Length: 226
Image 1: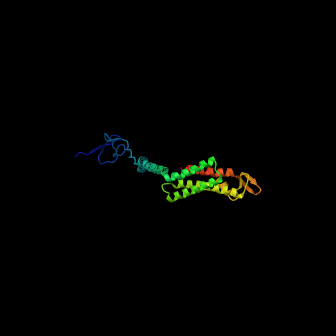
Image 2: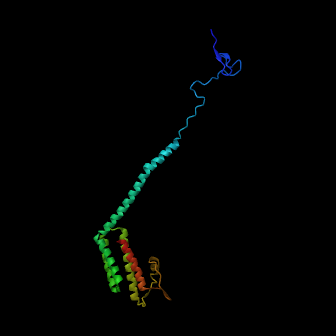
Image 3: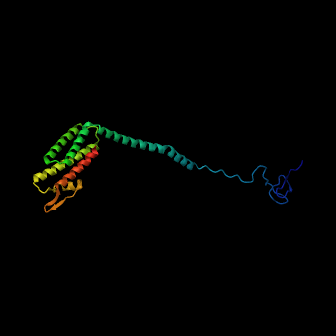
């Protein structure tokens, strides 16, 4: 029976097949040359897929492509809706004949003041204005609180001017000067005006200057209400 022989890969000597080391050079006989087509290089380990980074990237792309446009669409829709509501309210006020009639009465009074009015005519005009305003408030509708608040504020200015003018007449003051000791806080804090005269008995204001301050405040409010 023939003996199986295996060559030593190091020195080429023949060795029995069962021998583990070459009898000549002592090198292990287990070593073998790489087979044809097999790469001598070790295969590179496969790179692990970084799933957390992939998920984060997908989330960012989803936000910019879907969620963000939807958010801005809602914001723009809300802004447009609010603007449309304000515009509709303004149009309603413009085409409300009762409201326009009241606003026109305030404008007429302002025009008469610019021409010149005496106390009696002014007191009568303020009284008529109050009647019209009270009538409108009982029937009010289709007018914003802001517009109505401006008109009410304008009437308060006209009424306050009437009170100061009446006190000037009833107090018998002369030289167009009136003491505002009772109203000095209102005059300074609300109207932002200052006394024009300082006398021994307090702070005084020129009546024409005081009335002009009140009437200008009323005119500004009427313009905002239109």
